Image 1 (tube, helix red, strand yellow):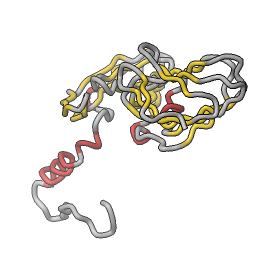
Image 2: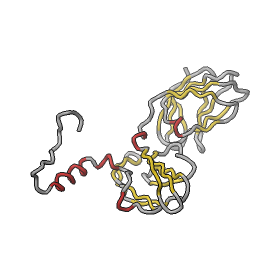
Image 3: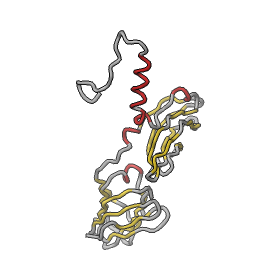
Image 4: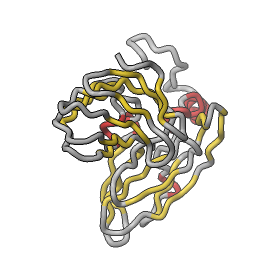
Length: 216
């Protein structure tokens, strides 16, 4: 319901076949259930999830319902790979460049609690103001979701800022002192260097980090 005047068909008290109307609601709302927990296939350390339609490299792709086997007695980070739509989990943390789905806490043989992170999947559209050490720096998952990346600190040499190669764009500001450039680069491929005191718009194209605008 978007406001006090509903736009959907109500389920009436005297209505027959209420399940037909309810299932029609679920069908209409199904994009919101993408990667949601599927109770009917979740049991013990098995985590079930709903599939749905996602864009993979610009193509509408159907992700099937599936299951994961969780690791016992720890926190499992369930996430989706945006370039394939595949769902996986690990026990370390959400992976930079992937879409967070759930954190799932397990006991020796079952799930004890879980937290839905799917509402947090849109980008922050915010500013990361990072005071970096005088060393190469790999940004965390939360950090790279900001659209503006600003770096301070004193450098004694040019340093790398390692970004995920998932296609996306950032505005970056090398506000460090010492007169050295920051190279924005992925774990593989080539990168670009932004001079001290300069700003630029950069883009990860899935293979390399490239410059959209010249330093200003």
